[in-house]
Amino acid sequence: TVSAAPYAVADLSLAEAGRHQIRLAENEMPGLMALREEFGPTQPLRGARIAGSLHMTVQTAVLIETLVALGAQVRWASCNIFSTQDEAAAAVAVGPTGTVEAPAGVPVFAWKGETLEEYWQCTDRIFDWSAEGFDGPNLILDDGGDATMLVHKGVEFEAVGAVPEAGPDDSYEYRVVLDTLRASLAADPQRFTRIAADLIGVTEETTTGVHRLYELAAAGSLLFPGINVNDSVTKSKFDNKYGIRHSLPDGLNRATDVLIGGKTAFVVGYGDVGKGAAEALRGQGARVIVSEIDPINALQAAMDGYQVARLESVIGDVDIIVTGTGNQRVVTVEHLLGLKHLAIVANVGHFDDEIDIAGLETLEGAESIEIKPQVHEWRLPNGRSVLVLSEGRLMNLGNATGHPSFVMSASFTNQVLAQLELFTNIDDYPVGVYTLPKALDEKVARLHLGALGVELTELTPAQAAYIGVPVEGPYKLNHYRY
Ligand code: NAI
Picture (cartoon, rainbow, N blue to C red):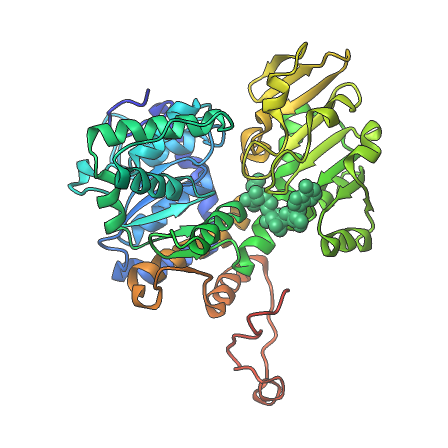
């Protein structure tokens, strides 16, 4: 159970270690630091009350402290039970000027290895602004859409005055969500309705959360506007690709230390994440096979030099499987039974149902042995084992520390600009889902060039006129794909 204290972290005494890491990360996050310089003096987020649900890492600490530097009040939870870096959570709770004895930071509710019940209680706590004297937040910063979903479900059930019983096909996690909302409704039957009325909007970090937002909008049930941060070019074409290229092998190495070179690796899905995963594995000397359902992505993979095959056609050759589709059950129990002894099974897609772990749990004769936290050997009834990382959840955050600071700086600079857009220009955003204007996307990129010593070529006025763009940009039409 999450305590009633103003924050809930693993160990406050880790704050100093976290602060050192945050200091180093700040040096690698030029976009966020530039926003502090640009907007710190005018405090444009004064009055913003942000409920954040995003992996509580060192990089996220720099994001949170940037929002605070722009005037916002913030409450935070992680968006995954394994992704918190406890030292970062402690440092955020203590704050840059506080002490372990007298914490003066942001209320954060996150630790590595939460149960699902604790996870949803933590998510609920970011909506409880009674300590600050309010019903709730006026902005959500979301990653995967869980915080947004909680409000929408809360409002839906409050309208009928009851939370339904779970159906037989509902997952264990959805049952926990229903229990969380049942407790909320019993304590205050209009709580989420009041919270939703105060909400200006949400900024959403990832592909899966964006997908959920567009679904709500299409169904006519979206309650407030959303900015799709994922589809800023400087987010999905950088974080999803180059971030995974770094953090996937990091997770594999920390989890297993198995040599990747010479192995056969299979990447399920060749979107932005899959492209980064395949490149990283090939870079380590693996033979990489890709699967896709979309002919365009399949053709891209083939042109990039990968074999493209169905998993079942090559399953017996595979040493490492990585899923990154945002889809469900792309690796089935049947696939797992076809693998070599001690093959590694890992997911970097947002939710934990890409690999059918639930199916493994009910498979007769299968048993799980913990090798170390977030690394499990599943002994299968056929006498072979597979190594499952992070119980099928995001392994780059569960087994390693997620994407590195520099690439997260680009993502989070988009996040801060999106929060600023909603808070200061809300009239431009009736209920719907939007991406940031291209000028801001280019601004994010520009803020990261200097640190890499990039020398950008300037258009001459004649060249600008010839290709029909302003000298200062934007340089591309919205449909350009990069
Ligand atoms: P995307 O939409 O660019 O790529 C997903 C690809 O999977 C698509 O090309 C789709 O055709 C393919 N696909 C769908 N079902 C498939 C199936 N059954 N078999 C083979 N391929 C299939 O999405 P993106 O941006 O690559 O994101 C993928 C997932 O990763 C999402 O859940 C996203 O939220 C998550 N993500 C995770 C990150 C991390 O740090 N671990 C970072 C960024 C995104």
